[in-house]
Image (tube, rainbow, N blue to C red; front, side, top):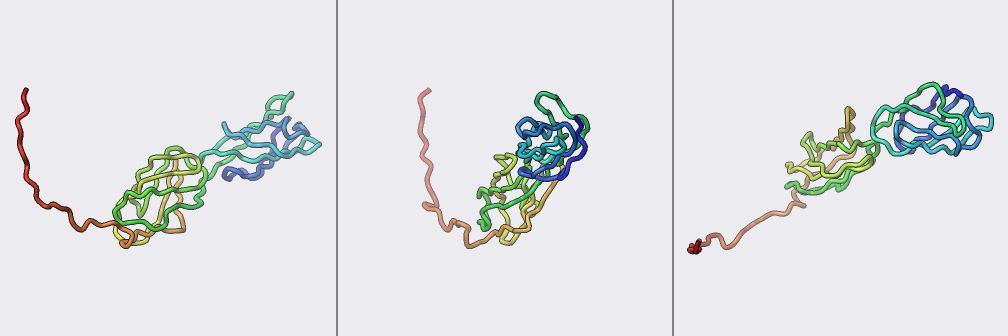
Length: 190
């Protein structure tokens, strides 16, 4: 059995991949497809054993080798790669206060667990990262509209949407009282 060609060799989780070759099984479940260590869920196989289709599972942005194992026959020869891309889908909230400290949720696909988020090129402190989500605490910035950028591995992406730092949403301290207080000393026995 031979692996000849992979159609759609770049994509994100959920990309349908067509693999052509020979010697594949006519039953989809008998063709085990892996993209590196990520499952590619086989959903269709041609009766003549020349083509299978699968859906890429969730993976971080990376270049991976595609392997096909046919139950009862072993691994296919030939080598193809699949590149998991990073894609940004949305973030929230869109309007925040100037003082920072607000949690920002950045959603997308293909993130590494080690992901960095920037607002106006200022780091946002990431405290949670998965292949689909990065959560961080926003920095303090002056009023304005800023770009949000995500970096994972060697790839960076910037949202076309922007985040607004708005003074009207910012809590302020106007007074603290009492403004003076005495200090009382006391002896503590030793």
